Amino acid sequence: MRVTLIVNPRSAGGGTASRLDALERAAREVFGDSVTLAPTERPGHASDLAAAADTDLLVSVGGDGTANEVVNGLARLERDARPVLGVLAAGTGCDLAKTLGMPRDVRAALELMATTEPIQADWVRVGLAGGIVRRSINVAGIGLSGAVVDAVNRGSKALGGKVSFALATARATMAWRAPVVRVAWEGPEGRGSWEGPIATVFVANGRYCGGGMLVGPGGRIDDGIVEMTIVPQMPQLRFLRNARRLYDGTIAEVPGVVHTRVRAVRAEVPDGSRVLVDVDGEQPGDLPAELEVEPSAVRIVSRTQG
Image (cartoon, rainbow, N blue to C red):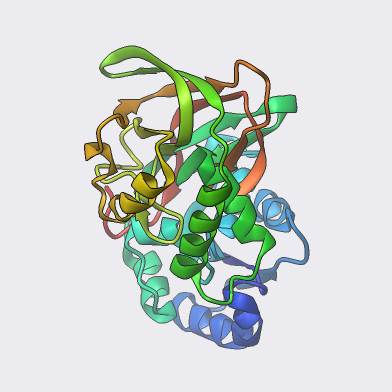
């Protein structure tokens, strides 16, 4: 089996760069000599490497941003030409790896990839203002979540994923001015709509985002459905008091929160103000946005899904 590891050397605060030799050695011990190590050199490079890789198993080594770039590179290929995707956690958030149940230990994760039958995973096509199109395999967010991701990506990640996201959430919440957003959706329970000032909207194909927030507690990446949660604007102290519910999977129990299962979502801002959208921990653009599940888009290795 041909194996390509796309590695972000700057992940884990730059620590991954010092472990490249050990990573390649472990991969060769598990898979043999047909292993290629492909370090990224610039933003977007992982997408280019993924689209060009002639391989059977493509492993993303980094955080959620690296995995998202790899997914968007695979989206350039015809479905039947896409290799199996593996995710090796080595970054700030690593929420996709957590959803997939991938071990943090490198050797254990590689052995799981070598011995586990992949599942057919969905991803979400995200169309944004200005014709920007991205795929989300984990969680897309609108509003405050987009502002948090922007703050995390602009700042230092030296404190690790959970702390970095928690601090960014507190800062962004204090500065947040809630826009009125109109959301319409279609799902297994039919069509629905909502309009009002928002804190944030999550569209979760996976289960975790933001360094461990459980925003898709019932989420499966192989069922053709995503979980959508609309958190309306609320007083800052009330929001911060309920912030723990983002981590324990109970945010839907807060009065006023909308939680439903959907296949397609459209979100727009009636007054045209700028509202950020994040896609798997990256911040590619703004509303309006159209999100639609693309089922069975890629085969992926998972210990807990499928």
